[in-house]
Amino acid sequence: MRIGAYGEVMMRLTPPEYRTLEQTHSLRMDFTGTGVNLLGNLAHFGLDTALLTQVPDNRLGDTAKANLQTYGIQTTFVGKRHNHIGSYFAEVGYGARPTYVTYQNRHNSSFGVSGPDSYDVEAFLAQIDLLHICGISLSLTKSTWQTALALVQAAKQQQVAVCFDFNFRPSLNDEADRAKLKKRYETILPYCDIVFGSTRDLAELLDYRKAFTDETDEQLVQSFMQQYDIKWFCGTNRMAVADQQLISGKLITQTEAYESEAQLLQVLDRIGAGDAYAAGILYGYNQKWTIEKTATFAINNAVLAHTMLGDVCLTTVEQVEQVMHAPGTDLIR
Image (cartoon, rainbow, N blue to C red; front, side, top):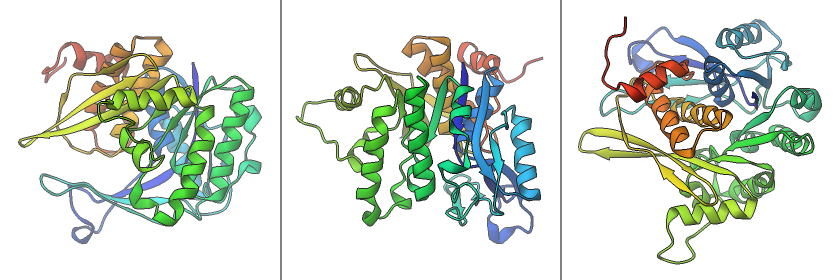
């Protein structure tokens, strides 16, 4: 299966050694983004991946594109326009101090100001079997929303499957924009085959509520899936027990629901771990695994992602399977 994504390439700037911005005079530079994280991981799983985006037409854009190629992502459809890249500072947390992300101007990035006319949509879709869209593109700018909509509409015509990640962040969307954003999500969902999200997304953005007090979260999700004819609905569940952090993976179809066994987290850097879970799900979908095997593989991949610095989880299938079948191994020779 050939997997493509439409998404922003961002520049991550990270202080070394768990330092805060006030404590450092140097920063590590990486190129990330939901699509980048997902495709880079899938490329390491052995799948063909390609990104549709725009980067600046300058040395920074050259560097970003070169980094994508080191991850194994095909860059034929990575265009170069304008002169700005979206960026953020990531102050990696430790212990009681959480990781703190500070975004810089994303709305005026090369990606943010590029609409559907900036891309060869038909040619891109002809090269892939599954398209990934991140919900951030629905709220970033009018141009990114129009491009996302044009892509899913064309994908439907070309019989390309669509995977959509809610990625809804209330902190990035005020109440005035919520109604407009709700309509955009409702417009794009009928084109989707696989959705990543949570019951919180359904409640807070789409106003989905339990019809009856005895209705389970799974039944709520399945009702939503039946409305939009979605095949898979996937997400994670984070838990805190005493001083330990745990995570499990959920995969729901219109008739079945499975939640993996909770896994203990040891967190070095949690940014991008959700994208690692999504990569695991899409790999299982590609392999035609059962929902049980797929969710188990995906959550173990997410657990590994928490142990790696940076957003892009560059695990291999063999590494994930080793953790699944021989947990606790601390030396491999």
